[in-house]
Length: 379
Image (cartoon, rainbow, N blue to C red; front, side, top):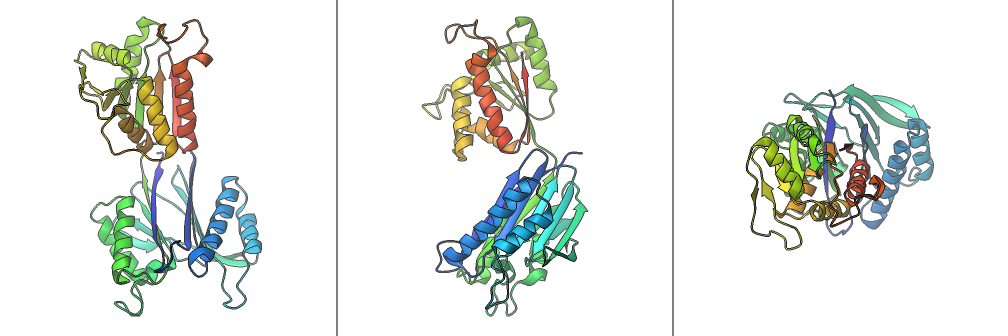
């Protein structure tokens, strides 16, 4: 069974600092997720630069499948030990998660990674070793659906130290609170928000250290199918609608004529919204049994703009909803009809110059760059 990782992270800078001295880098591909957390020595600008340098080096090399020994060696040479404090200039925690559930963890002077499984929280199993002259901890484990990983910087463990909690929150405090949160069924983004708020409270809202939380949940992929454009051959109408209805996942139709075909083949009524949620985006439609029905090219281009920008408006218009559903999906199938409206374009043009085909291919490329599995099928 294919699994994907849902990742969320957040940070609190040390009181009096604008920049956080911790840095998180997340890389996604269809086969693997890589999460890198680094805590720079000290706080503020200097710590932020050190942590950013560490995560960029590690993530960049790991993305290129450079062996771990070379990655650690490069970091060790780039960021040597501080002569005064005799500690590393920055810590490093790396978690690599494959879609078969295999997880690999490497910790270089970093707190433990916590594993939640079936209500029990334990440190991720690691063993000590030496790579490129540096002592580190590394381990691997097969994860299952529902497993949850938590990475933290020292600021989380130290929350409340010398004040409300004389010895700080510590590992036991983190384990107990994580178990409490996940017993409520919270998702990664909610866990990050709650745990950061918990630490801030113990710091009396004045963090004494940079504080970072990364939450990861292993789950089944979210699937979505999108149908856009009528097929070139009208006799294929029934086939593309069958593909839409038989797909196990969210169902989206983009295009007025396409929606009419789907409604006809389903024997259901197409209702069109009369109010504009966004004056630049045509109104949505409704067909019972489908998750979303919108206009075609204007809506797709606007949705692509939102995805590229990385900010999706909290509005109910068609473009925002298409972008949101695509952003939430892990596996996406787009069925594209190549019938050309002669009022818009010369129907004799090849597919490569088809406006709809070009837009869909650009959208698919963008989604793949974001680590999603995208399949295109043409009619």
